[in-house]
Amino acid sequence: MKAKNIRFFSLQENEQKADKKAAAKSLPKGYISAAGKIVFPSLAIEELGIEPDTTKFLVGTDDGKRKIKNLYLIPTDQDSAFFITRSGRGYSLPLELILSKGGIDYSNQKYVFTASIFQHEGSVGYALEISTEQASEKEPYTGKPRGRRPKDSQQAADQPAE
Image (tube, rainbow, N blue to C red; front, side, top):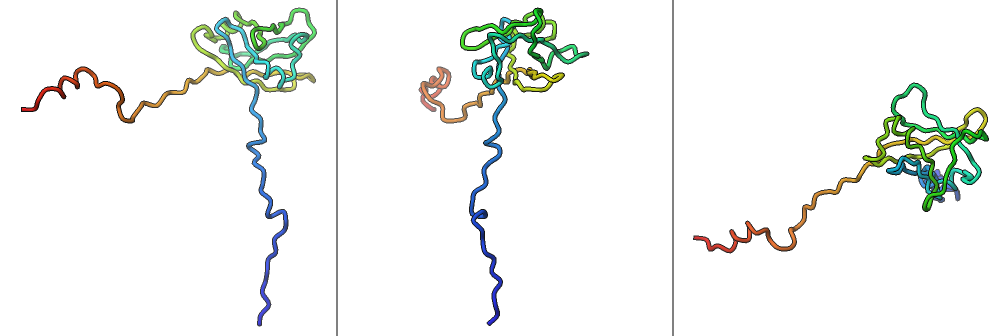
């Protein structure tokens, strides 16, 4: 009888691989209020590691662009910097004139942003990518009609067929 080639399994081959997608965290989010304030929820402030009571920011945008798509917040000690203020459940940064001059119509449309951390000249900065909020469209109802019939179809059904 001929010897058979047998492949043996290891313990590692029987272990399930972890999903890498589940480990990735989503970026902190916020929105622009109808009054022109950049609103950070408390959770976003914690995730970014911002000390809202003591931190002042230099606020900037991409040079040479007419419409604001990104805002950059750089922590600084200068006296002519912007403060974050407490508002409701979160914190806000009032930038009404800057946003309106930058082409953001915050009073008529809802804007949201995602915040990320980047390095700027040896210090940590925060990049806010601004986009419009996409309202999810409701699918039309295609099921069985419920309730009373409309008056026109009710009269046609009541008349006897001749």
